Amino acid sequence: MSNPDEEGPEPIQVERDLAAEAMAADMDPWVVFDARKTPRAEFDDWLDSNRPSRVFRNGDPDHNAEPVGWIAVCGPGCSPSPERGDCEGLQEDWERLQDSGRPVTFQTIKELALNRRVLSGKWLMHLATGFKVDHAWASLARAVLDGKLPSAKVSPYCPDTGAKHVICVYGDDFTDESQVVNLDAAIRAAGIKCPLSYKPDVYTYLGLYRGNRWKLCPTIYESHYDLECIPRRSRITCKVTMTELT
Image: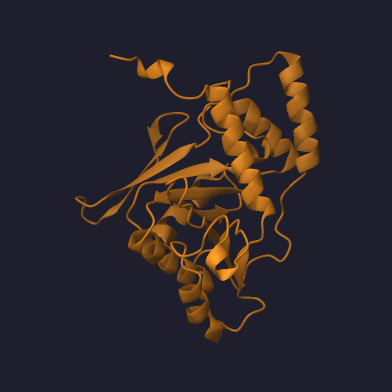
């Protein structure tokens, strides 16, 4: 029997591939409904025309469609210029950290993020293409439009890879546990029951994905919806300390 640890690409290559895919998606055109600029009356048609299971990541040659990086919704209260922090300074600090010989841990990454105010993060969910992702995305997009969530995006369909869609719902501060919990509650209130994981954007900006050389898990919280509990609720665990928040 073969050893599964000997199969597949090297972890570092996996990390590089994921980073390259993420960068390519960010650079390609996005399909965006911006509630600050577009009448709400146009939303239903936009949503139906841009179901994630029907929008092709690399374009649709049959309809002369261009590649699409993400499908996104910005709510009426979304900041026109959301604070991203000092990403350039973050990169410089990251290089210095690696050269210093100090351990690269969650705490040292958090320190860099705090120093440069790169504090945003997102709850992630991964769903197979088809009805489930279309239904979940529609529910979350409407919650954004109603001002219950700030902003969200979903990846389009990738028929060649068979990869699942990812939906991201954004928050302002990954270091604020109460905000992380409240954002999860708003997602659950929209009808989402699937497992969620939370990733600080600092990991994305530094190109840290699964398979990184420091063996850091790029998601720091996980949420599972307890259907047997009365009343039903999320159980959120901090993966750094392995403690339960709710």
